[in-house]
Image 1: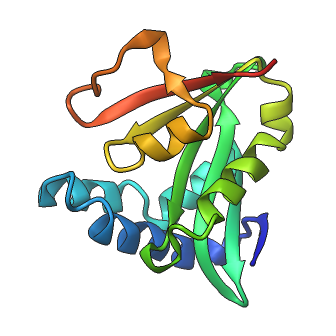
Image 2 (image 1 turned 180 degrees about the vertical axis):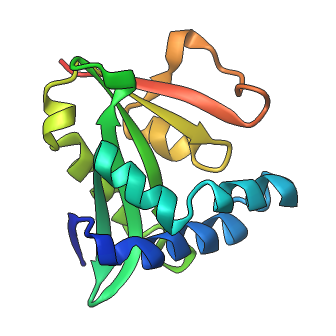
Length: 156
């Protein structure tokens, strides 16, 4: 498995990773209409735009894209960043790939210059991010609109 920077030809495969992952992994926590919305907001075109605004990475097993992750400035800030589009195909979950993606993102220049990194965490993934040192933003332990947690990590 390797993790490398996203390239334009990766867009369709990366969008498929998101679609499969949310259909399988997130469907136990979210209703079908929300899953459909997530897939729409992570289309190949959206991922191409996201890659222009931040640094997107893909995890590959051979030539197959099996995971994604993005880091970008938080609302244009030079001292805060945000993690987005972190997904790993269900059959690869639990193998350390998500952790490797997060570690890669945390070594990116947008992370190294930031004093704080935020991540909007799904109900499904909040425990994963908490194990990696992310904590509830402003101590708010309830999901925003019942859908997503705001987590953050401060760099030392």
